[in-house]
Image (cartoon, rainbow, N blue to C red; front, side, top):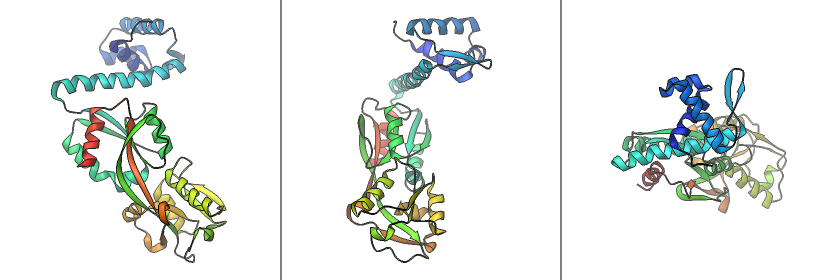
Length: 287
């Protein structure tokens, strides 16, 4: 198998993005025969079909999807390397993952300062649970992500970003919750499995031998806080999120005990994929 060349990868990516040779050729300002030939040469070199035809479009094969993730990364790094040699400044696209709580309460001033310092960098923000975001960084789908401890850290480098205080919220109409045992048989409202804060709550309840009645999963803190205020159940949230969302008048807010009340958010990136844009973000956090 010959070495991959960036020109062939650019053609392959254009065909994948456009869904056909003709549109890819127009985008690249090449003749169709050249695009078709280079694509065939790439498939021959890799000894794998990269596309299949579906409804008059070319769609990626399983092997093609694998190559596309690497092509994205290699082309991005090539562009960054050329620009870095020219002026040393980060630019291009920074695909950044974040928990929703961090996006709402912590990131706005950080990203505003980052954009002011490095306007050549376009940030694509993706939200998710800590476990899902860490996996996307490992799989090269994201360059970096803000995740909360605990998270699966294998293959990742990290630096501390924010310290959070976690609180238990319950409906104002309920009696005050004195300890974990008071939550027995109550509904817990949380993000999907993989959320670090949900793991902390489950660890606290498990230590006390308490089993919730059921768990309702939501995808936003707006929905979680609203459901708690309406009397549906209890939830664990960072105090910084409550400060942003408000609504405390309809809630009881209780600090979690000891180690369960403190959480650290870390910025993670692949140990072997430290880009100038990620380095600039770390510098921004340390400023």
